[in-house]
Each structure stands twice: as structure tokens, then as C-alpha cells.
Image 1 (cartoon, rainbow, N blue to C red):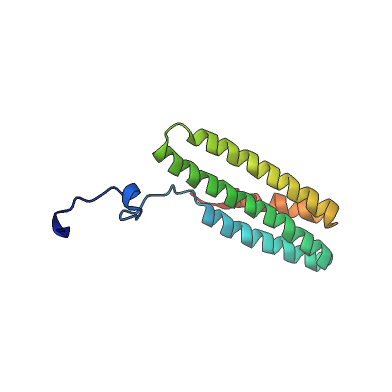
Image 2: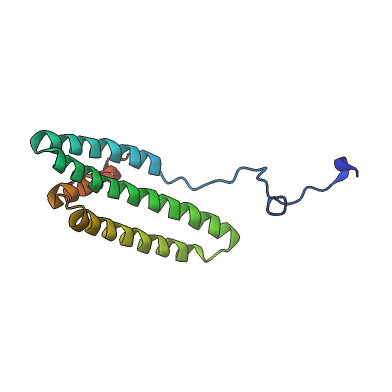
Length: 139
């Protein structure tokens, strides 16, 4: 076989990515870093002014917010890839991602407060403060 004269097959046929596909730039890593700093400061505050129990509750609440951002980023990447393969179905992926984030957040709040018996004030406070990561991110 003459390998020099073979036609190059598309990536989907070959199964190897010779060209780097462009992922949407969402800024999620910057938001997650800011949220991590804000959550750590909140956890330290609860530890200093209350106790370890409140600090653990705050860490759990902040982790829920950070998981939410990671899931949103994952949904955006999946929707962008889906748009390339099947235009028009990316909206469904985005809506499913929103529903998934809502359900996961709700289940984690319920698990944290009822099953793990965490402090609701610290849990909700850290979750709310972690949302400031969106406001503190510079464009």
C-alpha cells in the first residue's frame, strides 16, 4: 500500500483528533478560583467566631456552590459540542443542565441539613457568599 497517496480521512472516521477543537471560553476556572478563596475566608471566619462544626457546615455550603459552577461549565461544553454535531439540540442540553443543577443543589441542601445535621446558617451563608464569585470576576 502506498501510504503517501492515501487521502486523509475525517477525524470522526479515524477516531483521532488531529485538529484541536475549540471549547467555549466560559471563565469557569477563574470563577471557581475566586469562589474557593471566598469560601475559605468564610470557613475561617466561622471557625474563628463559632466552632469547627460551623466551619464544616460552611465548607459544605461553599462546595455546593462550586459544584454548581462546575456543572454549568460542563453543560456549556457539552452543548457546544452537541451544536457542532446536531444543530438545534444544544438548547435541550442546556435546559437539562439547569434542571440537573437545581436538583443536585436541592438534594445536597436537604442532605446537609437533615441527614448530616449541619448548621443551616453557616451552610446557607457560605453558599450565598460563594455566589459573589460571579460578581468579583472581572471580564
